[in-house]
Image (cartoon, rainbow over all chains, first blue to last red; front, side):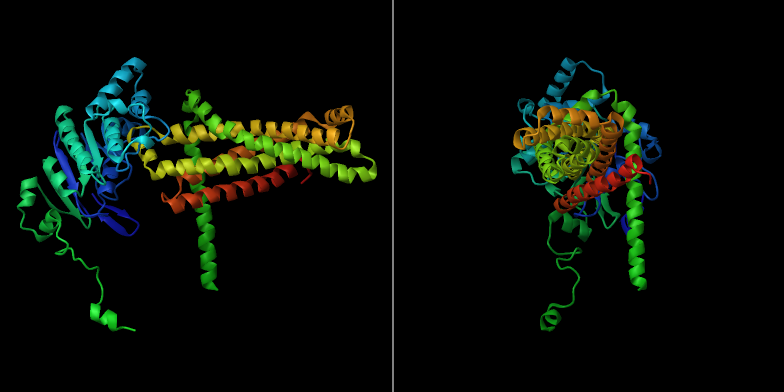
Length: 255
Length: 260
């Protein structure tokens, strides 16, 4: 699959598989198009070339109606949480259920409370999104992502900006929900230790290409200097510390 | 010279491209209207935020405009001994022109800017993308109720503006400059034609309302999701909405009352 924004090539003929029942991580430096990849998988963007298939369906050849049917089987956790700000936590979780089912309100209440209980926020059901901390908002968004019992959940930078406790909670939730709900999870992140700890398989993306792939252990033991620099967070290496510039002395002496 | 021509050409093309985008956007909204009519609660909620919350500014502005109109009419007409006709001038001016136009301008400033800011913020915080990923069409759930509510709210607000304006004129004319109460009301009633004056004014308000909410939701949806982009989109809504009201007012007046 290839995808460009204007003249800038975001993905150049990449190919990857998301394995059923596994946690697959997409990692790479900021600005490499990780979020764009999730939007391509969800059918919000269309690739220039190639195709994206889910359960044998070419996502971008589906009619709008069929695409919406497919999306009911996908959950997505946005980096910002993307909670609807004019309704409370309970109604945020209930929103997709009310929209897509004719379930009785008492049954919806039970379902919502179960989803909130799964993320530990049953007691926060009456709070408005503005009253939640960043970590709580992400957990609510997580509960909403699984509201329709999807088969696949995509997480966009779930750990960014979280304190250590919230991060630990999110790490555990992603792993445990993947197992208990038999999900296939796609985690987009550049938080290396957290992502390595919960992933079954990792793709490292840079400059529009997949530069490495494998299990967390395989990547940790990789001899590729780029992979090592990314995994260990070295400030200099194949990705230079300095942006391309003329020599310092020449710049300083220039009038 | 060639550069200038090229730049002008590019800008003109960009304007037409944007107009095309806005038309397609409106078409997508209109397609969702039948489904929306099955969910009246969505429309009622938006009627509250676009209509009811604009009511106060309409009431206050309507009252003052009516009072000023009556006062100015008195200053002019008293020289000719025709001050009894104040109500005729106040009522006809409000119904034909000032009612729909000022309500439209206030609506663009109050409700239009709020709509753009709300939708723009929903876009920048990924709420619209989130709805899409939940297989919920934001056109139907977010845009269409707001467009329909604005379309319904404008004539109601205009009617309120006119009514309050006539009462404001009554206060000045009867209790301020001493016109006989019976003359004020009877001349107002006598000189107003239901179709020519009131209905034409209402038609104007419907057109203005539709155009303003169309501009407002499109600007919000098309805004650059940054604080600067959102500010620019809100400004564009007020400026374009106000200019559209004034331009369309001339066009509609020419069609309704003139021989052009």
